[in-house]
Image 1 (cartoon, rainbow, N blue to C red):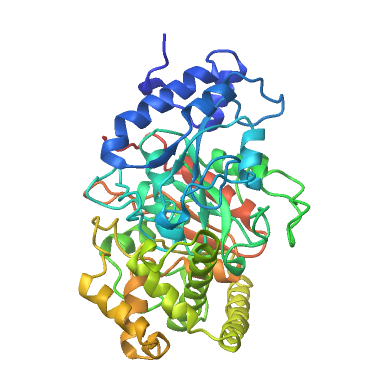
Image 2: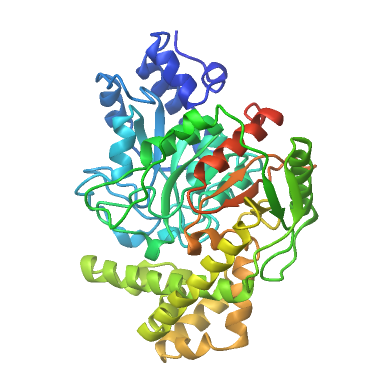
Length: 496
């Protein structure tokens, strides 16, 4: 008898793997359950943009390695920097064509070595460049908790798939919050590892100049811990790596953390409004931490948040410009093959001089220093992930008239002048107003995690973020496991 969804969704990834090891279920049965759930939710959610069902069925028939952590567990990768050899990745863009990947990404290879059955690639905004998942190439992904709202981005397809119970864990990556944002909006665990922990190769040395890291979104802390153990560690082509800790994170979370000193804030670092629900989520987490014996007080790193926002976005636009130009040179894509917002970002990015880019890079170290000084006094920093609950689909759409204006300004070569205006600075604040808390961890390369402790009166999840110092992944996961035990969330599921 096929495994039913009500039974399938009771287990996290490690739980399903244990069933396979004990011979209680065959990988083919788990895969069939995942495929049925994907089919049932495809029209409402639009999470998967490329299906690999037959490939996964073939893998399900093959023996798995005895040491595999996730034998027979269905899995999805993000259609961005998580290539599967022989399969095209869209990167959320019509410009990418249908060229198959020459080789698998390091993380993909490791996932398959752990026994995971990859049966699809998930939706992402074009080049992962937005905090929502509404690409013109594939259409918007919808949040399972409220299908009129976004699951966040850029790993929104993966997060919606996990929240809907299609898979217990899915591939994600994070260049400015793209793991933590959708985790917070979908009621999931989202760990962003520290810089150098997980390879971005073999094609890339480091993503976005070190901003971007690979990872997953999951429903349980132990799945995130086991995934971190599986993914961290050196690759021969990596530009650098951080040596793994002597104790695995999966072992570490079986022990509670020492009592921690935690600073918290509810104020946006760029001075934009923060919704009462986001404030309540942090205060609720702080109260829970205090009952567990941790010392919690209001405190923040001494950082100019508006300057940090600009020092994040200007290089980001430059990376978008480089990506667009490289794709055009390789594929012959035209300007119109890219979304209007992407064209506007690329136009601004091309106006950044090498000298200015290097000056911004030098300022990144000031944020590293400020966060290090903060962590000299506090173990962790607690904040919202989102300034308000998940936004309605279409809320971030750029008006068509502004698209025309951007193209006109580009045609006459004035994009560089535009970004020197107050209008451009105001637009930066507007674009980051929903997610102003996440970029600091990317610039500094420090680990951070979104933990699903809070649901508002409308039943929407709103995760909170903890940022750790160097080598702080185990501490983050230990605390998340303690919070999970104190305030279980695994059985909280959307009604879809």
